[in-house]
Length: 210
Image: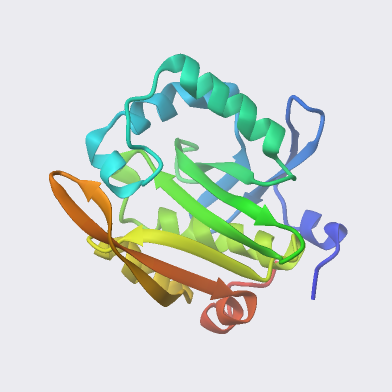
């Protein structure tokens, strides 16, 4: 059942707004805070998107990105908020460091489904629970407030750490796109995964109460 906005607001740490004047909210978890993206975030995101190691695990980052391209991405991200995508910046609660992005995209409001993506760009913050905490926060928001029914993702078969994390959160493998990604002189399979709201709640019973 969809939660009311007043219920959601009662668990937030601070209210933000973006340059369009739309209210944006910060969500606080055990290790992370999801906040609205800021324009000065693109300084770091430009570095991350041009990092070969990060590009290997994020399918959208296939080619070098310029500062102007990143500014356009920022502007389009804001214009798309609440229509086809929702993007948050990820901060570590330990030191308030901006460490990555997380988003829902390709939102289909009629079918109540969307895709999902996450980037932890600061490498010292990888593999310490930041990603999991951020995903749980975002999915609580998606299923309980946005009334999304199904979240889908695509992940390279070689990215076993990500696949294992997604399975722990409740994702189910739905299929394989054989030799779908060309990288480092080799074709790689892409795993298709899905998560229904009911599956998320079953897998994270103690974590889904907002």
